[in-house]
Length: 174
Image (cartoon, rainbow, N blue to C red; front, side, top):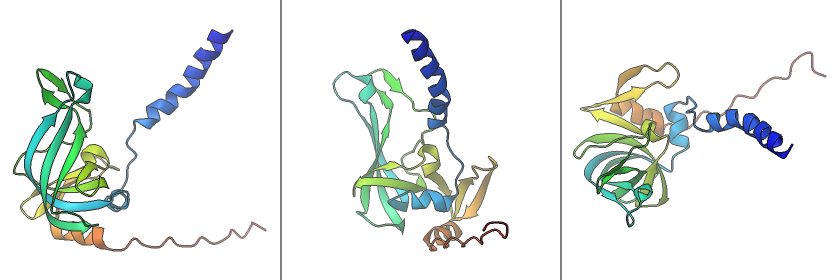
């Protein structure tokens, strides 16, 4: 009987666990509101840190130089820490996480528990490639990719969030 209850509980909770790993579509403005800092950065270096011989402790540490603060402020140099990496013959890849290349420029959405140590908000969607004066934007609602002027995206993210419009009570409600 107890085992039947455990199986039933597992079946009931399984859909909730699947939803916990689903990326909910959201706009750039919503991503910015979830971030403590949004910045245009240049990638300076990248290294992989590991604790002992435990491949589960692999972390990729990317050092960046902030070229422009869009939302929030902090030090000009900071590190972005991500789970996974390759070291000592081990490779741990996190599906859906962003990848950086030394020398690239990107618009990043960051959560910074310490001012100089951050992680990405929305994993892969927390890094937008900057090519010249354009940003490659992924529309999470349609799945389409497009290029937008970096200055327009920065202006959009710096604009204050619109206030919610009050809803009118229904005429049928009393």
